[in-house]
Length: 226
Image (tube, rainbow, N blue to C red; front, side, top):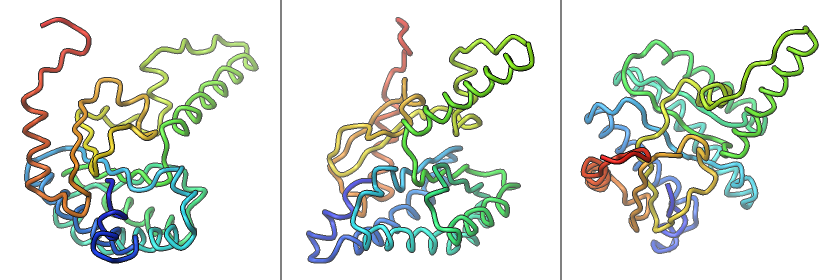
């Protein structure tokens, strides 16, 4: 979701003004995803690298996240949305983690769209975390005198933070950027990519629909010949 800061600067405001406007795009896209019966929608809200931004901006983003999580609780329940946050929670404030857990638990029984917010997340963090998990399993097996599990794609995927979430079909990147930026590096092996110059605060239902139409017109071969 790129372009919040540039959008704000064009309006003559500070970057946080753009982040607040971007939150409205999040709401609009979630509503449209529910309308289109999309089962999974993930949002790359804050990367591990974003912790290097100015402290004032980080504080504003965390405050916005806290307000958004609690503020959308009623909407999640009304639209049967299951809410989940994936990322390194050790870097988040106790207050924010508490609000996240509260909404996750409240929406756990919902049977509508799965809304996954990637917060303090990076693909490298996820892969390293999975590798450590596997190495622990191997060490445990040797200590118990048993055969360690054979590592393959499925087993490694089971150690990732997204283990119970399908790999993405489509990744949309706004703001004219054309790189993956450490997002779901393992999971995006066969994901379709859609790039647009539209800045995130201007990305609403019409732009979302264009991305979906582009995806629907593609032939996905997964390395095979059709």
